[in-house]
Length: 270
Length: 177
Image 1 (cartoon, chains in turn yellow, orange):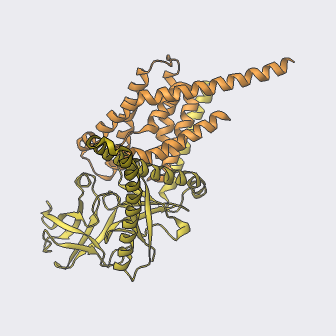
Image 2: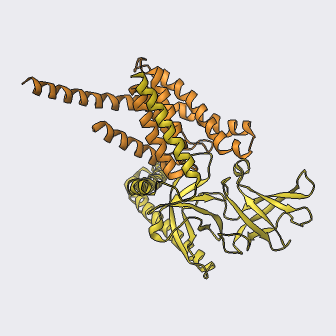
Image 3: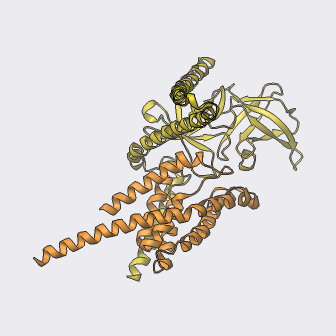
């Protein structure tokens, strides 16, 4: 029995280690398993996400009702009815706001082929800044496609399942992008840094010591960025610091897309 | 069969809640690791083999939908489930404080390994920053949920065991006839 358990332990660990080694090679992923599971997990995530939004709306409406009830007991029933109606209108208005916003985003980049998608889940791991959108390979989404929020770069598609896709945000330490300052005519690499991410900031590296990057400079995607069309806003320089080597400097950058989790994003599918 | 179905539903539901509901209930930007609580609790209730398999399945799901390297979470879940079941299976199952302390210890170890895999190997060495901002709050939050979730899993496990026992007796009676 003890020998069987030992074999089980060693066998299980070996299986995991082999999976880790295989995953180092690009393109090796259990796609069939992931696709099969996404048929179950993604609808569950969509349903739970919508239920949470509904409960949050109800909770807000109930709090509001309590205030009204204490002010005027006679209007209690009327208030409840009105609050529910307001909540319904609020939900419709919220949806309208996001759809209008999405339309504006599309109009801002008419030359790009884009697809709007709702955010349905957040990566549960606090070491990462990622979220899941409810559009996948079936909608034309593929890995490395740029993701925009507002009119700026929000992240990039890391993995596209059949009905969902995972987005790495600009704050994630795995994210990096080549940027260019139009005013200073200088470039560098913007990447996520977990310490700065806590303050909603990112880091720009590989700035030559002679480059005149200054606080307030607007950074846009560079022509050297392999996955992003040039000219998309990335962020604004907050501060510039010389590196100890004396030859280069780095900058702290505030992302133009903000740090809040968006409800809708635009994926550039072109 | 019932056990497999119940555990599958538990793992999937937990993953969905971890990606949707828990972020809304985050404290100091940190969410509880309920998967780890279930892995440790199940190992303590059912022993090392079932604990290891449960941990592997829960970890594998996280690998598929969000892991950097396939197999990291599966390996961690497998080892934690196996170790939880090894020495603690003989303990009194209604002692709810033991799971609390075991979850506390494993959460620290688990987060520490994640720090090594995700950050230390990539040259980001500000260890105490990660301890104060992620590992410590996550451990407190996770440990706080350990007793209620262990109680829930203990209840489910007892029901499934009752069902399995009834079924076993049913077949034994048939054989006697």
